[in-house]
Image 1 (cartoon, rainbow, N blue to C red):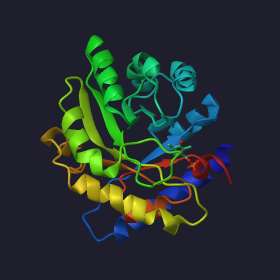
Image 2 (image 1 turned 90 degrees about the vertical axis):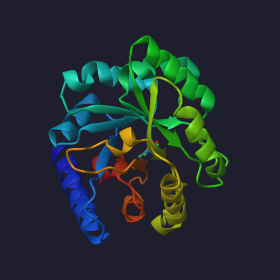
Image 3 (image 1 turned 45 degrees about the vertical axis):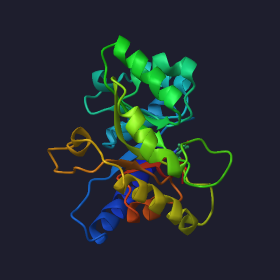
Image 4 (image 1 turned 60 degrees about the vertical axis):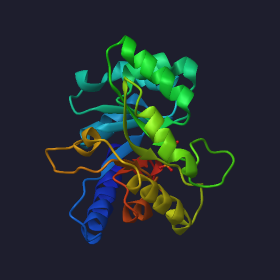
Length: 240
Ligand SMILES: *Cc1c(COP(=O)(O)O)cnc(C)c1O
């Protein structure tokens, strides 16, 4: 298992670095988020040992068990926990306690609940707005045409920082079919008037772009070509 994970991560890094170099823009930093739903604490330790510092979970309950075994910066100072699944308002209190970035904010009501709970523990909660870029009914997220308004509204909440956008493309065997959804997310982001705090996110590398979280195991190369700077990988890391 250990060899498989390290082999997979090496291969992913090669693809990422090859694509990063070929986009022609100034070299951009791409965060690999390990999606660990259904994986064990041992497997998570292994990806952390390979230098991955961003861990994504879909369910608060499952994340809590793992977080308690590997409590963020107290386990490893680089470690960041990401919520990437649909979040119900009754789970917000615990989510705000453990997650560094909540990527799946899909309603103003949820954003308000997050801000309220974050305020109680004196936290500025970083979030992404989830966009439903494809017409698929099963997906959560804001409609593309409402995102500009929603951004304005939500970024006024006192205990929230909107750091970027996230989308999930429909499942398919053909990565090219995701391209238009990734392109759309990039365009939406380019049209948002991001706050200076967001643009200064990584002063150490000079990367001033908002987060664009898009691309999974089947289509991350296409996502990077379309401007992703965070890719969320489960199978590509843990499976053959
Ligand atoms: C499961 C999941 C992923 C990872 O999917 P893989 O195909 O295993 O890479 C990424 N993002 C979200 C929101 C997920 O639920």
